[in-house]
Image (tube, rainbow, N blue to C red; front, side, top):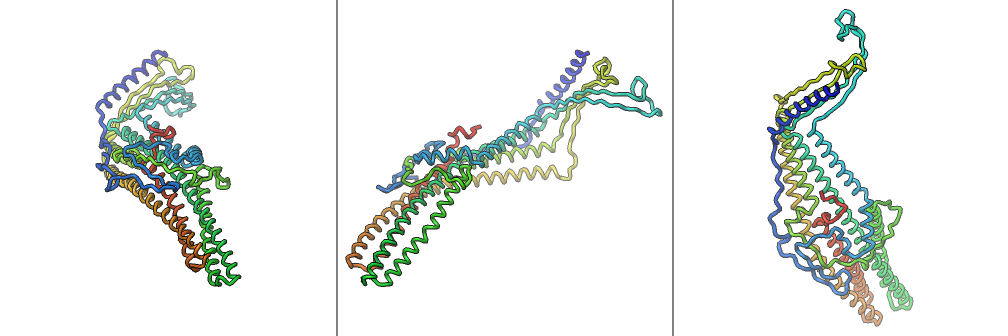
Amino acid sequence: MILTRKSRLSRLLTTSASLITLLITSACVVGPKFKKPAAPDVTGYTPAPITNTTSTPNVAGGEAQHLTEGGDIPGDWWTLFHSKPLNDLIERSLKANPDLKAAQAALLVARENVLAQRGAYYPSLTGSFSATRAKTSNELSPVPNASVFQYSLFTPEVSVSFVPDVFGLNRRTVESLKAQQEQARFALAATNITLSSNVAAAAIQEASLRAQIDATNELIKINANMLEILRTQYAKGYAGELDVAAQEAQLAQMAATLPPLLKQLAQQRDLLTVLAGGFPDKDLPEKFELSNLQLPQELPVSIPSKLVEQRPDVRQAEENLHSTSALIGVARATRQPSFNLTGDIGSMALAFGNIFSAGNGFRDVGASVTQPIFEGGTLMHRERAARAAYVQADEQYHSTVLTAFQNVADTLNALQQDADGLKAAAASKDAAAATLDLAKKQFQAGYVNYLGLLSAEQAYQQAVINVAQAQGNRYTDTAALFQALGGGWWNRSDVPQH
């Protein structure tokens, strides 16, 4: 009896397989076939060819930077600053940052959704068993062959159901989900790059702020000393009350610039702590100084045709375009006929021990087709909406590409301007220092009045702050260039490549 039951099941599966094969071999996939957008036909990022930056001798961060076209971006580009605290903090952030972990989970969700949808390619097989106790009316004919009005019924059953993907509804759905999975993968890469860039930028800003705070403290000390000198001279009749009052105002103004700098420093420390996955009540072990950073002197610049492959935001936009293209096929497939194949095999007995007895088995094979006839225009408008969504995604892709090229152009221009800015700031500081030194000597000798000294002092104060800011700009925009070129995520083992 068991062999007979297996034979019936085999015949059922063979018949179903024949119908499935017939439908699949005649199947087609409706909707447009996605074509990857071509790389922009441009040969550069700026109207003029890129050139190496100028140098400022004897100033930290004043080295010339050489731009190498076609160079690859290292995955750990921040190590080019040769700062162990920066390396440690970024690596710790890449392990503990919650945004990065959330992006990793989002990729897993997208991957599982693809695998779940792929299950629709295969027949579904379900098993069931029911046991009932029933009594029929004496006015009716008894249901069982045994002519009894009260009986038990045991029914084990196996059901097979399959919906052939004749017009590619499932294939287009899987295609769209796979594109969404790729979007999640590139979102993870973008989060990785953004995190490392934000940590580097915040660390550089902290270093610049510390230099500005040190310079401000030094200037406050200078002004305080000058005030003491003026007060002594006033007591001896060599200086006027107006001179003392002016220096007091100058000292107060300089002291007033310190709290905002300290506030910014505290905020940068809080930001770095949170980026590393910690709470701001615990201070970081790392501290950053401009003197502990080295300016990368060899900068790779990717060729324009490579940029669209390297920028994760561009790749996200591309996969969004791919997903919307597949959804056009999904919308078209829903307007086509759908087929359904079913089969059941089982047994029905009045006694549990007779379930596998001869003559108690049953089986059936069925096929159905459904064709939408009238849906009030719903399916038609859904397809039109899908096509409009594709146009929207296409324009968003082109906008993202333009923004990517703008980012690179902005940073390349910034690098040269930063170099020139530091050179000018350093020259201004040297000139202001010489002027101040001369003014002090002439003031002590009585050749210039206090107003001349005050003017020289103010110029020097601003020059010192400008140099610290210019140094920070060079480091920050160098980090921004690596980010604009894609951050080298394709060279990292902790970012999935497929």
